[in-house]
Each structure stands twice: as C-alpha cells, then as structure tokens.
Image (cartoon, rainbow, N blue to C red):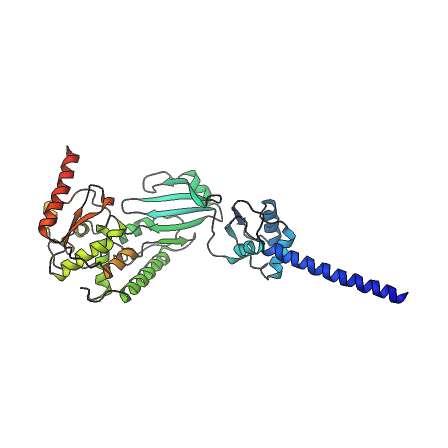
Length: 386
C-alpha cells in the first residue's frame, strides 16, 4: 500500500515538474514573442511611477497580454529599478521584452510633444509639434515668430508639461550673431552670452536642450561639434589644396555655404573657387561683399550697390586677393567636406540658371562661355520685369 502511494506521489511530482517547466517555457515565449499591439502608441512614464502602474497602463492599451507577466519578466531581467520617466514610442507588435527595454533604456524621449526653436537665415520660428504614433510623423500644433507674434496658448500649455522635449535647430549658413540673438529669446534657457562666438565656429545642427540649461553650455556644445567636424574633414582632405590651415578651409566652406542653392552643387562650386585661388584670380563672390556690409548682423534685404562692390572692406573679394580674414557664416558639414574635397573640374565661372536659386548654376571654363550664360540669365531677368 505504502509503495503504491509513494509511486503515485512520485508520478504526481513528475507531472507537476513538467507542468511547471511547461509554464516557464510558455511564459518565456510569451515575454519575448510578438505582442498584441496592432498600432504604435506613445507610452508616457510619469516621474515617480513604477512598473505596476506602467504594466497596467500597457495592458489597458492592449500593448501586453498580461500585466503580471510583464512585471515578472522585468523583475527577472533585473530592470524593475531602471524605469525612466519620459514619453516613448512603442511600435506595433513589440514584445514585452522590447517594451521593457524601451522604458528602461533612458535617453531622449522618442514621442510625445516637442518644441523646436528654429534659427533660419532670414527668420526664426518656434514650432510646437506632436508625434502621431500611427504614422511616425510629427503634426504641427502651433508655429510663431517670437520677434513678431504673440505667444500662442499651445506653447504655454506644453511648457507646463513635464515630458515636453526641446530642440534648437540651426540652419546651415546662419551667422554667429544671428544664433546669439535667437538663443537670447529662448525662455527655457538661462544665463547671459557675454560675447559673440567667432564666425564659423558653431556647427549647424539640431541640439536637444532641457529647461534650465545655460546658453553658454549650449554654445560650447556647438563649438565642440564644429571642431570635431573640421578636424575630421581636414584629416581626410585632398592633397595639394590652396589652404595653409583648417581655419582657411573653414573660410572657404562658409563661402560655399552662402553661394550654393542646391546641396549637390557644393563640390562643383568648391572647384571653381579652388581653381581661382590656384590661378591667382580674385574670388569675386557677392556673399563676401554682403558680409562686409552687415558684419553678419541680419540680412541685407536689398540688392548690392555698385559702390559697395568697389568698397574696400576686409571681406570684399572683388577688391581683396585670396580669402577674406574670417568665415562669413557658420557652414555645415557638407560644405566643409566640399571645401576640402572639391570636384576635379576646369570651371572658373558660374552663374544662376534661372531666377530660382534652387535650380542651380551654369558652370563655365572660359569667359566666352560664361558671358553666354550671363546673357541667358539677364534675359530671364528682363522677362520678369516685363
């Protein structure tokens, strides 16, 4: 009798063991396999939240099949103490393991509302936008010019939200003066900028910021980024270029930036100016004349006068030989790389193809060809005036 009982007990334990093992395998597979989410969602993790609240919210949104299993998996992975506040994009079909990684990895939020402070060549804007998880695209909520427009209510509201992201986006070709003027208008930054950074020393890019960051710290990030870009491009430059230093290449890059209406022409424009330097010709480029007039403090807003083309300023390349003494703007990476790796051409002239700068230029190796191109452009100007 006792032997029969022992045998049944052993059988029961074996069955229980296999059932437990099966449950573990099922749980593990459920944790790492594709989840039930049919459409991407934005998950907000509040400051001070915990995995129980997050798991229940995910279950309500249909992102996980079991809140308990989600918590058990996170605990087994040792990540329950690594929850990070923020707004995170959870893609459709994300597994529990992937979602745990998303909400514990940290870094910048990947969805939700963001404010972008755009510093452009002719104007600056503040844009409030929100990511649509379904499309993965940002939808504009409000946009305004801080120098001219009243602050919209939408901007005030998102500033009060703890998970709002902030970015400063610099257009290629903006001047250091323009950047400082606009940074001083950003009300989530602190501190004063005592002096304008050297022209060309700030890298045009998109910079994540947080309320309370200082303007000086942000400028340091921009300077460091430009230093890295220039050093890398200088190390990979072509041989035999007419530059004695990275600083001279940066000056050339700024001219290319201001002369190029289409990105794919940068290396051609670079070849023209390099050929001119090598042949001892003056660069004769209008943006340098404009910089001599404005010193980078805003846009000229009108055409260049003949007297200004003849005026002797350190930047007027119709008057001076070689490069001007400083950059005339802050060039982007592409223009820096173009200055140091120009196309191999015989071009020494170029003029706009049409009245739209986006249409690019006609390039020429001889003055006769260039005069024909100029005549074609003048004809287009005459048509517009008529």
